[in-house]
Amino acid sequence: QVQLVESGGGLVQPGGSLRLSCAASGRIFSIVTMGWYRQAPGKQRELVASITSGGSPNYVDTVKGRFTISRENAKNTAYLQMNSLKPDDAAVYYCNADVWQTALSRMSFWGKGTLVTVSS
Image 1 (cartoon, one colour):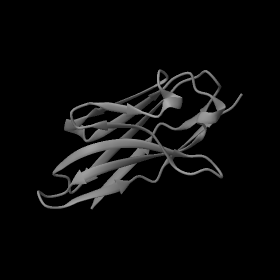
Image 2 (tube, rainbow, N blue to C red):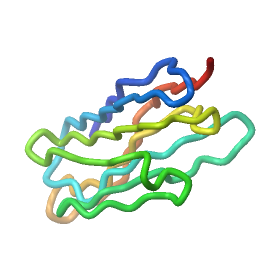
Image 3 (tube, rainbow, N blue to C red):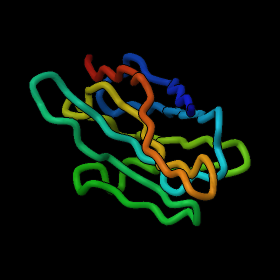
């Protein structure tokens, strides 16, 4: 199996910054895409940002110019730098990884989430 552990969430004032980390471990042959999703109370989980193994990022429009996703392939770790945070960014942030566990077995895994609260 593969475990994803997120860290870096917390309470921040509007306009502040946080950096989330997601470390993958376990039976990993390679990781195709790593992504960050979020889910606010009463809302559906949405994709915030994703990044391919080659480093190509993708963002939801609402975070473009404020959030930056990156990854260190050698460490199987992804990061989400969040700047200019708004109250609407408050949510539980989940890490997702699309993993080749062997040359024939590919699965998607989720972390347990980290809470981001944006409030003054």
